[in-house]
Length: 139
Image 1 (tube, helix red, strand yellow):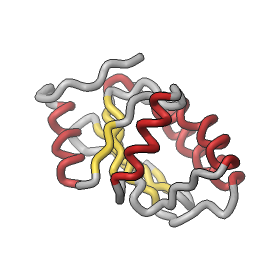
Image 2 (cartoon, helix red, strand yellow):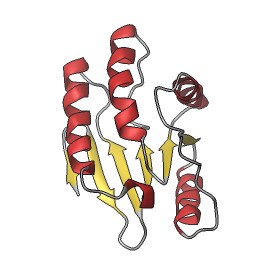
Image 3 (cartoon, one colour):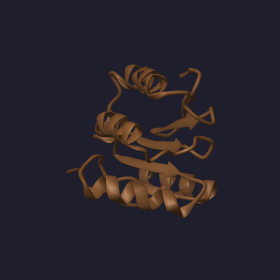
Image 4 (cartoon, helix red, strand yellow):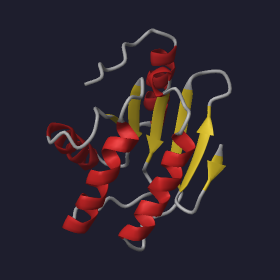
């Protein structure tokens, strides 16, 4: 479906699954973070999010927690995570799960189901689209 400097976006050929893959290691600044996420949001326009499972592969990206980054993510997370049938994140470390949990608790993002194993993440995505696993309820 497309590629920019920081992300690729692909759709599963036979299931209602989208995959966002981080292809860069770090954003040079918050402006670049905004441009990359604006690109994704433009690609998401017109998609029926409640029908789709989004698998977010962020393993390559470096997660920051400084105030400038947190503020920028606070603007984009609600827009990126809202309304998907399920939002699945594939991560390198369990520490990222803690940050996602905090963002959800602070109501910065919609629920994010985090995985460290790619096979488990995609099996779960397939199960959700096949009706074998319930998607999380929306807020």
